[in-house]
Amino acid sequence: MWLIDEQEVQKQINLANPSYVVKEVQKQYPHTLSIQVGRLYPSVYLEVGNGYILLSKEGNILQKSREIELTSVPIITYYQRIPYSTYQAGYSVDKKDIRDVLYFIEVIKGVKEKVTRIDIAGYHMLGLYTDEHAYVFSSEKEKELQLYQFEQAIRQFQIEGTAFSSIDFRFDKPVVKF
View 1: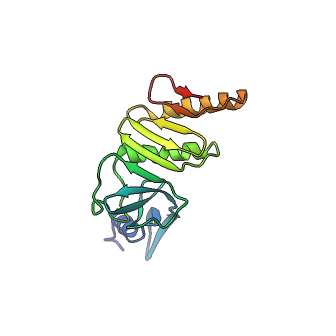
View 2: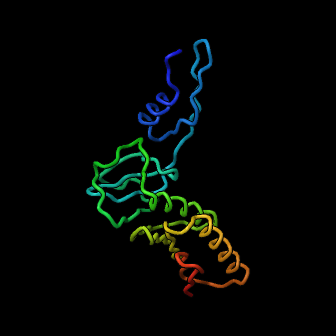
């Protein structure tokens, strides 16, 4: 018990169980190890060479597959070719633009819209598409500022009852198409 490293235990359990995340590992002497676990849910598929990687909203890789198994989960089309063998289940995606897309998917879910398709055309263009609207964000601009602009624009359009087709948040002021 004295030689157990909590961080190493946490890492090994996370790798062995990609659908769960170990939040905390704690020693309770004389002979108990307390482990707090949370469930990870599928958020998107990332299209990679000859297959797909299923990601949680936290950026953890839940599974790799050659075919899409969950048709209700949107697919990220990425501008670079990522080899299928680059990532393994249990690891996290380290690309900032993909992590930003996962963040903005949750933002859009907050206004009761479902993202159906995602295009990452570069570090500067993250396109998220719903059935009614298109939203374009950027990894080069602060997420918090884009979130604020998104919330203000949506609130204003809901108050006025204005219909729009797309909003682009990459610039100083959002660009809206009606």
